[in-house]
Image 1 (cartoon, rainbow, N blue to C red):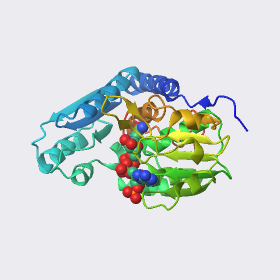
Image 2: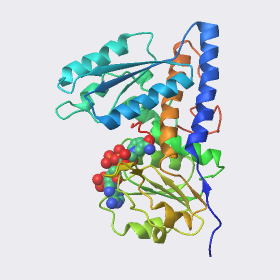
Image 3: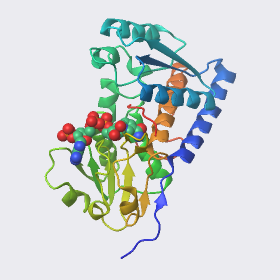
Amino acid sequence: MAVAAPTLLDGRSLSRSVLDDCRSRSELLAERFGVIPHLAVVLVGDDSASAVYVRAKERACERAGMQSTVVRLPATSGTAAVSDAVGSLSADAGVHGIIVQLPLPTGIDPAAALARIPADKDADGFHRYNVGSLFLGQSAYPPCTPEGVMRLLDHARIGLEGANVVIVGASNIVGKPMAVMALSREATVTVCHAKTQNLAAHTREADVVICAAGSAGLITGDMVKHGAVVVDVGINRLSDGRVIGDVDFESVAAKASHISPVPGGVGPMTVAMLIHNTVRAAERSVGLSSPHPGAEKTGSSTGSSTEVS
Ligand code: NAP
């Protein structure tokens, strides 16, 4: 049975409304408390893709009426220098959210640098306290990419209760937290990874496929059922400069009911959630706290990896 043209899960447009909401909250913080939410990014080396991502985060901060600072360090910096830079930002009461742009140049231990970010400035949602809180359904700072996916689904009114959700990719920053979030919405969750036998047998059973493998064109039309919702988290840079996802858009769009594009799907939502987490941190720093991540706009029950595409 042929399905009509799928609905696009448009992260670009939804991210703008998230950022506009953040702007209203920033203005309120400035008026009432004289506080401007402030995101600090530690950027090490001169990786061109990282520079593009960081610029996108700066632009998002501008749109949200926030302050941003980029601390640039040379690629030759050692782990101690990067950790010290993070430590200084952690001690700065005027900074509300901190991220270290990944990947770091070879030789710098990302775990050591990330460990210096306190849980209450953890804009990326990577701190072990926040990861544990997510597991318990109480995270104040959910990881940005999976939370961005949840927002996209919520906005399209795609409920997960009772749905078969298949997640392709099991990383700590995308696949695993995505699985916890879908489970907390009462989905039946399957997590696939590189060692999964017969991936297609799993994806064909899915009402919702969320792919975060980093493998261009991995999911093709014959691997999804008619009417499936397909969310493409992947970002793959081709030698000709184009950026494509993990999903073969044309063949999958011919069968899906909803599909997220790359670029313009999950990427902008990831950045929006980073900004959102920073505004929350600023609110909490003055004693304001919203009931739950995502509750302000979409009713998400929980909450970079902050890549943009
Ligand atoms: P990662 O740490 O490399 O993890 C990739 C996961 O996918 C692993 O669990 C791996 O399995 C699995 N995998 C790889 N190839 C597979 C295959 N052929 N079949 C099934 N599973 C496979 O990557 P990540 O950080 O999670 O990122 C995943 C993708 O999302 C990348 O393209 C990244 O650029 C993109 N991303 C996008 C955003 C955004 O904002 N849009 C944010 C973050 C990441 P094993 O565990 O067995 O190795």
